[in-house]
Length: 107
Image (cartoon, rainbow, N blue to C red; front, side, top):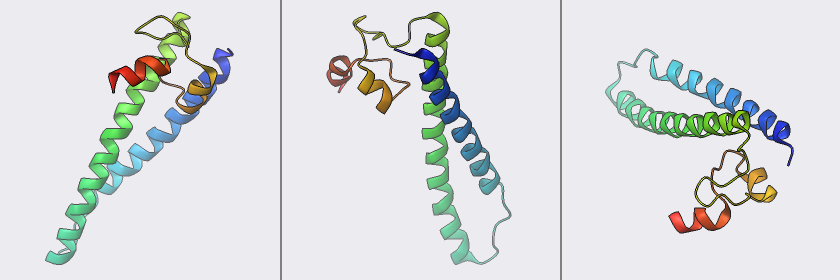
């Protein structure tokens, strides 16, 4: 397994999320439309943006943890059972701390 390949993937994804979160913060801080119907639509949009922000923040935490595992030399090892995480799984979800079986058991 090439940890540097995954480090590059994780860092690129982190940059992408940080850019998206910055845009969400900007959008949430915009001036509100004085029209009450528009305000209702904007409030709904803000709820969606806030949810995207929470999801992005959670993914950032997982990415940071994965980057730390790379630094520690434990990347690609399941934190639950200690088994190897399959390369196919790491390609799909490079920040996963669990092998397929352990992830399924958390269900």
